[in-house]
Length: 235
Length: 280
Ligand SMILES: Nc1ncnc2c1ncn2[C@@H]1O[C@H](COP(=O)(O)OP(=O)(O)O)[C@@H](O)[C@H]1O
Ligand SMILES: [Mg+2]
Image 1: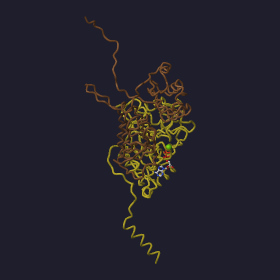
Image 2 (image 1 turned 135 degrees about the vertical axis):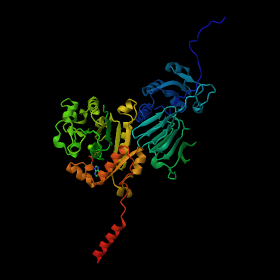
Image 3 (image 1 turned 30 degrees about the vertical axis):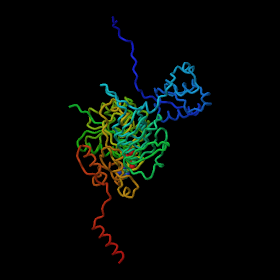
């Protein structure tokens, strides 16, 4: 005797790419200053970005002192939406109720979240990249949020590329390119010809004058080594 | 038949690169080819174009007067005395660029569109209000660039603005057609490495090359006499501008004046002869 009723909701697990906000110390002034500079460089950078707060980098003492309520308020001021907290250490269950965010017992590992699992179903997987076909001109800034950025033309001096993933430039890269801007150290930059003003991966940057002199003006990739050195190699 | 003029902005970002010189030459060039052409000076506050065109004494009403309904468009248009089919709309010397409004500019352009084939807009320098007014309704843009880094960077910036802040960009219409015009080109200084080559400029800006105008004494002479250089027939600049017009109208022509002149054998013989004579 089955009663025909349509369900009001369904729950499905999806691998959603989330940014993790690693708090590196508990100096709120320094935090605000850094957020402020980032905002000035890319005003929409944090807009509507859900973040998971990670406290694993804090020393136990600082951990105690961190005012999570204030932290969440500051993050929201800059457009981020704190949705969960992980590696909270000594922070107990009480915190999450006060802050109305989830407490993740099993931290999202970065490799896990960025892996794209192709589904066997008929649903077409959304591609995780943004393609730009025109020259990116001086004064323009493009940010591929949670994506790779692919530019089929040149990037002018004074232009800026930002991506959470990799950056590919099939023309000459003359401007600035910042890959893995949300902290993905696996991100790389590939370009057809490197004349960039600045390149950065996960916040580790190098100016043009610091580029290795042995580099040939041909296809180049830039990545971070285990020791977190920026490495340039001709392809 | 109802005309629908093409609006062409002559722009650059940087000042002093040759926008006004080129606006005068291109408008005369198109008019001489039989197209009804009007050239508008958007450099409000400076007024250069009428001087260059040699009609400054005939300016009664200007662009701002028309925008403010202080004069009819027909009263403000000055017919060129040398070239048929050509009219000039001067800028005001007494106002500043903020007197230009989008709606005002739009209504003038709408009125001109039905009467002319080409509307040439001579842009002021910079990337602010005045420059935006000049480029906003453009169908085509001639990016005037000197072969030096600062000019190329400014042109690049302008190309970005053309592709994002103009009417065509905002309405998601077909993008503005872009042309590169390299001006004040001096092959000798390029050879010495003091200036970028046409190839370098073209490579960085990556838009079709419409023409190369050599650095020329004739241009200076022309602006002092009020006779635009394109009318100084035998001069190199005049020929280069004429080639540019032909290319704009769809002809394929090789670029001239981009290499250093080769010294011919006879001139070398001649100069050695002189040396011999003076030595002897
Ligand atoms: N091809 C050229 N050769 C020599 N001088 C030039 C040339 N083109 C422009 N000039 C000079 O450069 C100066 C600026 O030119 P102008 O057309 O007024 O530039 P803009 O309108 O871009 O400010 C003027 O003195 C002009 O005579
Ligand atoms: Mg001018």
